[in-house]
Image 1 (cartoon, rainbow, N blue to C red):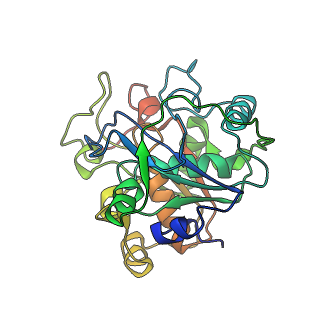
Image 2: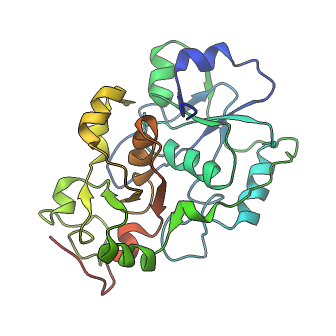
Image 3: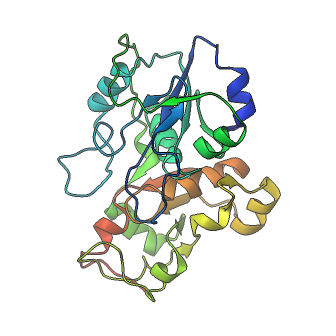
Length: 273
């Protein structure tokens, strides 16, 4: 199992590697009310990985849904990404949206992709080089080719089937208040509650100061068995935080329910509270 996260000091030491590409997976708005403390800065040389627009299926009424292989390939090539690129993804909030970008590259068959532990805040704390936020840049076209791994994404029919079979453990990354329906969903028109049989694993419990807790702590919190793991949340973003935490300590098969609660909540599918 290749370790999927790197430290700020590792990234600083490898900045001159010609195969290294740094991607900022920024989300300007999020449902967790987290705020970017450094909106005008980025890691020196970083390229914008636009989850909301370029790397989502914007024709889908659900937010943040996985794009087609063709779209993902085209947008990656525009960023100058090659088949042999070593990709490090970070976000501006510590660890929030970067695991989503990491997982998307995994789902497109690219193995050399890593998440910067602590993200931009950790990088700035260490005093490493930053520059003003770059909004539009053009790069030499890369030769990246996405090879979609369909087993890494589940749809609502497969999640519904798993309620009966209990073949996989379904982990919900939302807060316990949302999971147990003691707090209304932040999006309008959503029922409150959770998918029957799922277990609540709030992503915030897996981090400390914007970085993942130690493998020993994660092992105790997550309490995994040998079953395959499925992950859900509000719209497929924070589910990837929990997936990456599990990847740090286990080789269990893992997949994201990409529709998550934005698909399940307004429907007539079964819920528990």
